[in-house]
Length: 195
Length: 159
Image (cartoon, rainbow over all chains, first blue to last red; front, side, top):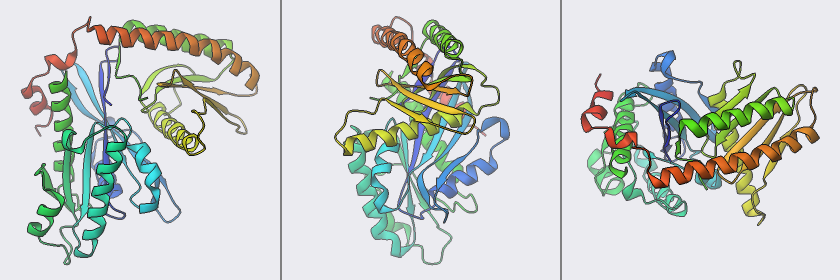
């Protein structure tokens, strides 16, 4: 849930990167962190296992500039993708303003994408949200891999509602900022619309 | 319940004063007031060296995880937590279900004193949050969101 502070003149929003295990959610945040100027970002926190798998969440606070004298601050979170961390995923969705679903384009990860997307929809419903009413974008990650499924196979299954979608390679950064900008813009537009 | 969705200067100032008084009366190193979603709201004491943003996010995560445990155990929310460190101790309390009050203290204070002082401050904060909620519901102040235009949003994302 967005938080508007009229005292410090800030608009704060929460974005959550969701998706199956090893799809590149944390890599998105690492790239954003690496390419953002120090004055626009806070410390990136990763609560990870010893093998670098996300255990609870990654967190990155970002400033995207000012609107009408109000600083816009976005708190970026990732969820742990592994199936058995479902309880943690539910907690991270609390108060969410916008969602990025990071799909793994590899053919063999199609089932995992579908399962994660269904899990997203279910967990949002449990928290009182409707994915079709939330600012929401899809990122097809790992487009550079030779075993990436063609877009015309991914689209109908993962994006039947035709939300904004982006092809990406999070390790090189292609599509990462396009995705972030799209969801951030959708969140602000929705806030304005709901006011 | 999520954190508050708005804060006004008058209540912000009063909450900062409650935090400052709590820091003084409890002999605390620092006091942080955080929305349940992890948004920092007010602080007092020795916070210059603290990464308040990270601390707020992690504390909210911690409280959310503890809330998840309480649900599994069919308990109501665990309303307070205490972390004992070598030098710094952390006392965490839920304030009216929507905010988190964090007190950092050392050997100059004690858990008993912190608990006692936190109780009084929490009650004041609950009253202030109710005041904010009423003001927001009454829409007595124009929202910044109604002033934002589509081009303001577009301009933010122009390279």
